Image 1: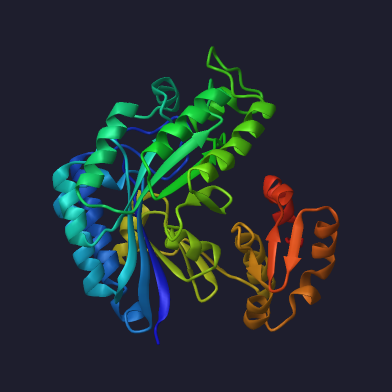
Image 2: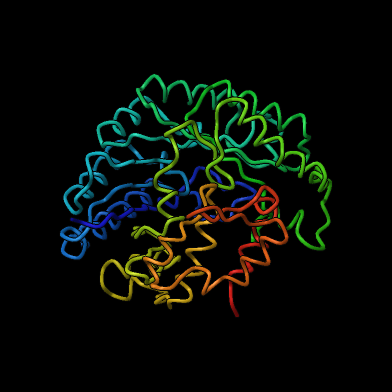
Length: 386
C-alpha cells in the first residue's frame, strides 16, 4: 500500500503586495509568470521516478502569492504535469487560493477541469476601510461577487480567510465581519490575528519603536482578547466547530491538507522557496528566483537547506503541531511512532502543565484546555528542549 503524500505548489506572484504580508510573493509581468510556469513544469516532471511508485497524493494545495492570477491554460498545464508525474487519489482534496478581483468564470471552469475541488478566498474583512488599511486590492462588494461566482461555478467546498486586530478595527466591526461571512455559509473559515512581521510596511508603522506616522492605532490588548473570544462564540453559534487554533469548519469540512501538516504527513513543496518534509528530512528551495531557476536546470542545488530531524526533534514536532488541533494527540500513536511511552519522555512537562490547568489527559488523548489554547505558544515552548 502506498504512503500518503501532500503536495504544495507555490505561485509567488500577486497583483499588489499587501502592507502586512511577509510571504514570498511580488507583482510580476506576463513574461515572468510564463517563465516561472515553464520552470515549475520542469521541476514537477523531475519527480516521477522518485515519488510515483512509493506515494499516492492525498491533497494538493496551490498557494502564494495569488495563484488565481494565472491564466486558465497555465493552470491546466500544471495539473496535466502533476497527473503525468504523481499517482493522485481520486478522492484527493485539491485547493487553490484565490483573491477577489482575479477570478473569472473562464478560470473557474479551468479549475474544475483540472480537478480542483476547494477554493480558499482571501477576504480578511467586510469593512472597506480596513481592507484599504491592509493594502488589499478589492472591496467587500467585489469579494461578494467573487464568492457567488465561485458558488455558481459549482464549487461546494469554500474557505474564507479573515484577519482580526487590524489597525482601526473595533470589536463591533470584527463581530460584523464574522456575522456577514457566516451568513454566506462557507464550509470553512480561517480566522487569524494580525501579526506585525519584520520587513513589511506594517512593521515600519507599528513595529518596536516605530512611530505610527498618522496611521490608525492597533486595537488594545483587551479589545484583541475580546475579539479572540467572540470569534469562537459567534462561529460556534453558526455551526462552525473549532478544530485547530485558527481554523473552523462545518462538520466534515476540515481542511485535510492542513490536518496533514499538523499530523506530520509527508509533504513535497514545489516552486520558489517551497518547504518539504520527506522521511523526517526537512528541505527548502531557494527563495531567490534566479537561484531557483538554476536549481531546476541543474546548474546549482535546488535544495538550499536540508535538515535531518533527530528523534528528539520529531517528538517535539509531534507534540507542538499535534496540540494545535482540538483533538490533540494520541498517547498510543506517540508510542507507536517513537517506541517510548509519552510519559517517559514528557511526563514532568505534562504534569506541570496539567497542574497549571493548561493541559488535559483523558484515556488516549492529550489536549489543550481553553486556557491552554489561549496561551498555546507558552505551552508549545515547554515541549522544546535546549
